[in-house]
Length: 110
Image 1 (spheres, rainbow, N blue to C red):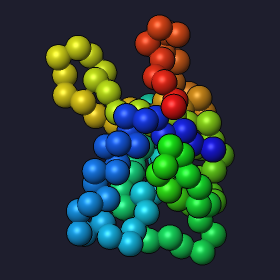
Image 2: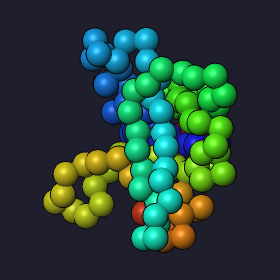
Image 3: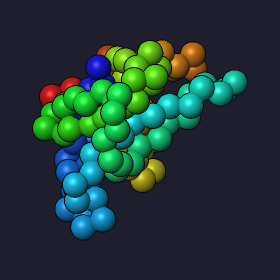
């Protein structure tokens, strides 16, 4: 469903040690706008009707209604441009504004 790269999984794992996040699961969501998708992620309780999955050791949930928007997405943690801060990167083939990275720059999914 969603692939969380090893680098993103390590960063999310660090956040699970925060006492505020104990007992919660990472949730991914997207909002479709005229410019493309806006992505959201954060720790949340699991709800009835959520899809509960795992990637690279990270359990995550999405709302069932979000499945069509998020299926096939890759979440990475990297720099967009050299010299910038690292951040989460959402690569989603369902997003009309998505441009896949060149093969030499594509993240490793393991």
